Length: 389
Image 1 (tube, rainbow, N blue to C red):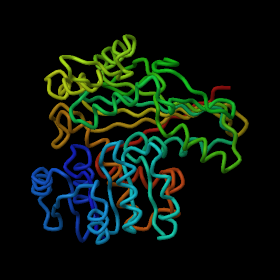
Image 2 (image 1 turned 60 degrees about the horizontal axis):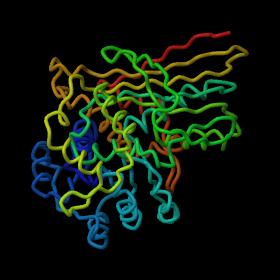
Image 3 (image 1 turned 135 degrees about the horizontal axis):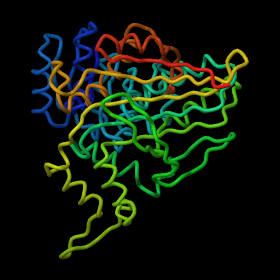
Image 4 (image 1 turned 90 degrees about the vertical axis):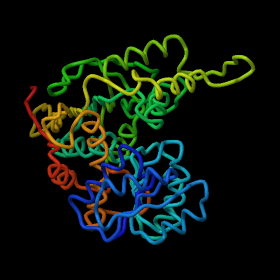
C-alpha cells in the first residue's frame, strides 16, 4: 500500500503521517506539499526509508492527478478552501481518499469514486471523525434516541497556522448557512454563540460554556439514523477554544468584524478579518496559549430496556506539560487531530471499511476499530452510563 499525504508539511497532517510510520506498514508514504522545502523537512523528521517527498500544486490538476495515480490512498491535510479541488484530483486519480475537514464539497465526486470502487471519507480528525464514532457507539445501544449532544474543547493558539486562522473566521461567520441544529425532524439555522451550555470536560480542561458550531456531525448523524428509520428529537454540536480566544472572537462578532467586510486604507482594500487573521498569524499572542490539548464529550440520552438512560463518552490523552515525550505543548493538540485520520487510513489499508463513493464516517468504520487504533497512541475513550428514570 502506498499513501500520498497531501498538504503533508502541515502541523496536523504530519502527525497522521508519523502515526502511519509507527503503527502500520506501508510500502511508500510521500509527503506532498506546495512548500517543497518544508515537505523535505517533514520527510526527514519522519526518519523512515519508506518516506519520501515531492512538490505538489493542486491548482495544476493534471499533474496532481498523474502523481496520485501511483498511490492507493490520499490522506488530505489541506485547508477547507482547497477541498473541492483536492477531492476532484483524488477521485480522478482512482485512489481512496480521506480528509480532515468534511464541509461538503466532496460529495460532488461521489459517482466517480463509486465507478472506480473507491471510498472518500470527508472529515475524520477528532471532530468531526472520532466524535461521530463515539456518538453512534452510544446511540446504537439505545432502543430509542432522544438527543445526541456532541461537544469538544480544542485547546490551541488562535492562529498557529493559516488554516487554523481560516477555521476561526469560517466557524463564526454570521452569514454561514451551516450553523444548524437538528430538532424535531428539521434543520434549524442559529447565529454564532447560540444555545450556551456548560460542558464538563476532563481535567485539566474544566467546565466552560460551549456554543453551537457549524460541524458536519449534525448532518451526518441525522442522515445515518434517518437511513435506519430511527427518529431523534435533537442533535447539537458545540465547541470551545481557550477562553481568551473565545473572548476575542465574541468581541469581534459583537462589533461586526466577523462579517469580513471590505475596508480601504490609503487606497488599499482588504477584508477586515483577513487583516486581523494576518496580524494574529504573525503575533506571539496568536501563536501561543497557556493550555494545549483536546477534549471530547458526547452525551446521548435515550431509552434502553424501558428506562431513560444517559450514556456519556469522553476521551483523554497524555499531558502537554513535557512529562510525556512527543506530547509537549502544541503537539498535544496537533497529535489529537492528526492521529485519528492516520488510524482511519490504516483501517482502509487493512480492508476494515465498508462501501464505495463519498461516504460519511458513520457508514464506513466500526467505532470499536477506531477506538482500538487510537489506544495504540495512548488516546483513550471512556464511557459512563446512568439511569435517569
